[in-house]
Image (cartoon, rainbow, N blue to C red; front, side, top):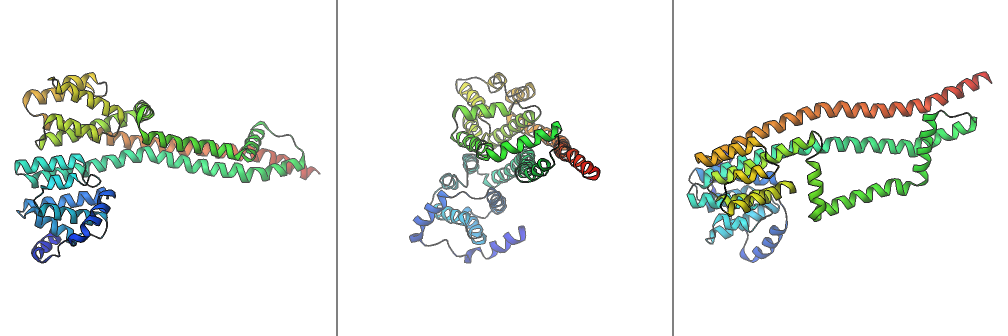
Length: 381
């Protein structure tokens, strides 16, 4: 990576400038409206931090990175950044115009770095923050999605068996006119209902699922209810609480470390919070702090931050080391989150396999018992 950047630095003065001004409005409209990959933004941040820390001017650094970027939405964003910064616009302001690539946290930290003259160091913090946040987010998402995917696949197989396979066995059983065992009769009844009312059996859950995501996307009371319920799910709720506490502590601590005022840092932390319950709690903390209170007291009263977090924040406020205390909280809770996710996977995998094996066993037994009766009747006949 460093060698590639150095090669681009050496030929940076001959790099082609972004497209002509006549193309800028069309490019800007396209770039602003399209979301870019978070991984691309993180890689860009690492490279920009390397270049600026080496003393290369921001405009030239952006031009180099634009030149080596692959065609796509992010290359268009970089072209706009080069154009704006070349015209005298601060980098943070230029980034704030592209919220789909650079969120409020990103542009606020860049602004703090510009103000303090430590842009390179701040960009390095942003890169580390984004890499760690993506790592934790990926693990938490995997912990939630994995069992759902396995369950959906299992239910799909079961639905196919009940809809297409069981009816064939039913015809065989009827032709021999034998008495069905209770498990077999239950299986046949379920198959009959599924085949006869398939539009309800499959349509109603699908409709409810679509409505769930629609109302969840709209926000409001339903979203708050679901997010509050998620935090109360046994074990998984603990994982979500710890991951949200870690995300808040890392976001808030990184912003404070960069020199962002506490109220602004709390507002950005609220905006980036993934859970509505935490968003409301952070908003309450911010409102109380704006009235002159310390940060620790309203955090302790919120109901989502435990005593360890509030005590460390209180010590940080008293010693003037709030940022370092918050980052220690983030590291501790990220480690706890990872351990709990690893333990959860160790339990979920065998539990799902046992449940699936149990259901398959039920179907096999329900079909095997009458088949043995049929074979006995045939052999006697």
